[in-house]
Each structure stands twice: as C-alpha cells, then as structure tokens.
Length: 368
Image (cartoon, rainbow, N blue to C red; front, side, top):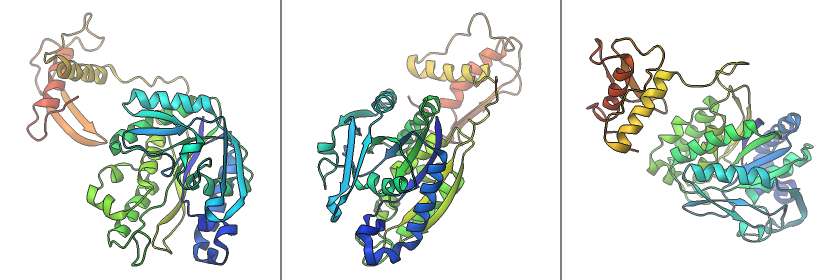
C-alpha cells in the first residue's frame, strides 16, 4: 500500500562528508531533509520507490533498474567510503513497467552498469543523496528505481495515477519519492546560467505541491519550463498523479536556492482513497459510463451507438439531458437539451455525449 511520499532535492553538497565547510550554505535544506527522513522512517515503509531524473534517460522510453542487488556510493563526489547496498523489489518494478506499457509508455529494464553516467555500477545521486538521510533516520527498505522520459506531461500524470492505484493494492508498505532540483537558473552565476523566469517556475512548483494540484504544472508554458533549466518537474508530476485519488496532505519543509539552484523538501501523507467508504462501490454512475461509451464508439466507428438492450434501469423515461466533458477539471465541451428529443434518457445521453465531444463550437473536436 502507498503509505507516504515526498519530494527531495539531491545536491551532493548536503552530504556532510562532501559539503564540509559549505554545508552552512544549505543549512535549511539539511535540516528539512532530516525532518522529512524522520517522518518517512516513522511511516515504516518496506519499499522506497524512487523516480529520479539522473538514471538512464531515453526520450521515448522509461528505464527502471532490473538488478536484484542495488549498490551505490559517492565516489563521483570524492567520498567513496559512503556506500549503499539494497535489494530491488523486482516484482513491483515489473508490475509498474507493465502498467506503464498499457498507457503507451514503453519501458526498458536497465542494469546498474549503464544506469549512472558519472559512476557506472552505482545508483545515481538522485537516489543516493536522499537515501543517505533516510538510512540515517533508520529506514531499512527495499528499493525500486524508475527514470523519466520525454512523454507529454499529461501522459506522465496519467501514469502517476495508475501507479498510485497499483501501489495502493500492493501488499508491501511503499513510500513514493520524486527526486529533483528545481530551477538551476535562479541567480546570476548559477551553474546553468541565469533566467529571471527561474523564480516564477519554482513558485509554480511550490504552489502546486502545497495544493497538491497538478493542473498548475500541466499548464506551464513550454518556454517557461525551458528557461527554468530544471530536473524535478517530471518526477513531481508523476508523484502528484499518484496521490491524486487519495485524501492526501502535503507539507513543505523548506525551500531555498543558495547556489542558484532551487532545493525544495516536501512530505506527503496518504489517507483513504477519495470517496471511499467501507463497502461503497467505486463504479461510475451508469449515465457517465454510457456517455463515455457513446463518445468512444463514435470516435472509433463514426456512427452513433445503438441504445443498449435492455435499456439501463432508470434511463427508460423521456427527459432532457446535459452532457459535459472536462479535462483535468476544465470544461472541454457541453451540449444539452431542456426538453426530450429522443425516445428515452439513454438515447438522449448517447446523442448529446457525441455532440459535446465534436459539435461544441467553443472547442476543437475531441479525438482519440
């Protein structure tokens, strides 16, 4: 089951043995990461599920680690004596990969030998930096590691939703972690150069996490994302998708950008699935099911779907019907009738669903 989550930055400088005298410059992030790690330890996860932007990167594929034993160290940062050795929950990794494939996201299993460009054979720093603090806090868990891809953000969000449902049904206690730094262009002299829009980007990320509202990120202009020079957007979008069906709450432990790179630490607590009560069915109302089936039938065949036989219970009478389509909470089409024009409510829904999808003059026609 999904028991908790969070966002962790991953600058190696927050590791005491690496940052040394410069650790004072990231004091807020160090303190916050310790607090976050203590919270995760309190939730007692059996699996740490990382989404990291610094593993194998493929434009059209999402990679995941497929080694049974996962090891890592900080040799790339001059601290080879700090090392990690964990078991990979391959069963969970393969289940998630299969779920991604269903959504049109190709996945590829990768070995540690090819995972991390800066240190072949090691977990990447997007994992090892937060893992350092998690283990210091007492977390003893297996690990699953997925990378990112360049699929559209809304597709990654839907993958996140499917991931959340899968983790909710998984027998082990899972903590989902989005590893990522925010804009790398906050100040003149920042490592990736300076952009005045870096601050705007980071503010959007922080607000989205505070509200657990992915729409703020899914609607970000491409030029703003490009100007920000970030590495955390895609992991965070997937995390927000994963928690979207739960009564979740977030807590921002800290945010700072002392070296021109935004570091944000956030924790997410997971409650019950939204609308879920013991014994309550999660099935959509028959009216909604019929509207969806009608529009899909039309887009697939070019024809109006026949009225089901027998007519679904409650839809036999004649009445006017309004059908509204929404995409991520925003209106996408709406057509209705005040008076009945068809033989029954079922037929009214079928016709108006198609009209809402393709005939509303305010929107482009819906496509599969």
